[in-house]
Length: 250
Image (cartoon, rainbow, N blue to C red; front, side, top):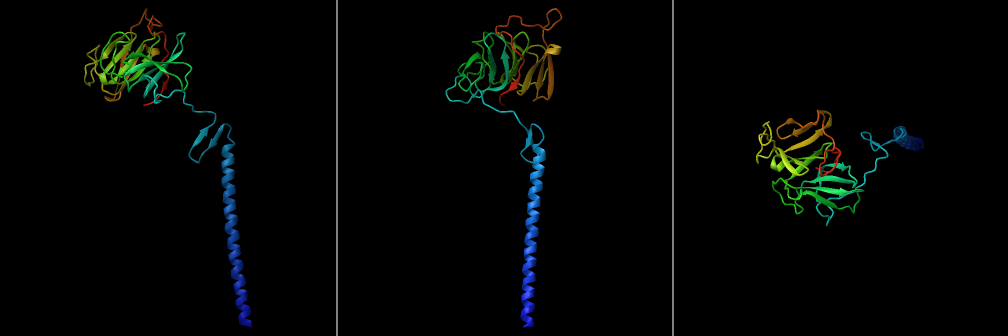
């Protein structure tokens, strides 16, 4: 009988031990969950912010909405719009963009919406590539990559496959255009670029800066001044345009 009583006592002690271990584990889990909830609450309490995880902090109030889709089937002259846009300051408000795929420059009337259509400003409406200066409706480009505008309303286009920097009012070449890559300074056709460069207008110094990534160089072109000042709206056929302001796609 003593042996039976001892065995029963041992079983009860082992059972109680297992129960205590289970309770301890449960308490530990509950404490961990509470600590995690408290940490998240403290981070969420920061005004205007919330956290998706411990490494990222997202600021509230910034909603992304597509207002123009250049890949929409049937949309004329607007497939794969890329690089930079600028706001036309004429009475007819519009956005100007470079369509690198179809090698033209397009104008899109504001306000932008998913039903917006584009109009070819210069270059071939059929996506024909080439190198031809002249009137807006006669000029040809080859994979123009980016553009910038000055206060006079002129558009300066990095026409990368033609290795040329083009000006659009009527279309002319201001630098490059030798049909091959290079890295020479000089005036007009003496200058040369790689096939990977961008251009931006710098109002403060009245110049164009060419970021030639292929050659790992930055070049400068001083624009003509009028009376010692950088010209304002001087009768460009395009009217006044602001500097490029946004990147659509690359």
